[in-house]
Image (cartoon, rainbow, N blue to C red; front, side, top):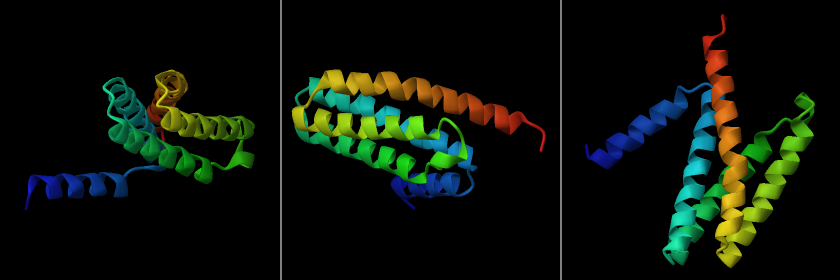
Length: 128
């Protein structure tokens, strides 16, 4: 079995056995990584690579938005509005190869990722 197929199998197993909180953190981790990579590709003039990363970031935010239960908690509508804003910014960042928009998205996503990671860790440590 090749290293790539072993990695894919490990990743698949990790996702299959992850809790919903862990999956959310994984999505945010990848979203932050996509934004970081996109910013580097734009700075290097690598339009196609930047576009690929930004499109993947958009897909993650769309998934986060579609799985959000807006009415489940009072912050739901604000988080939905934030996701919609992110989608718009990511589209414009891709169209214009705008590093400032990517940086703005990162300033929103990275603290959210850290907060979700902390929340997931505290849930994992809570008694069942």
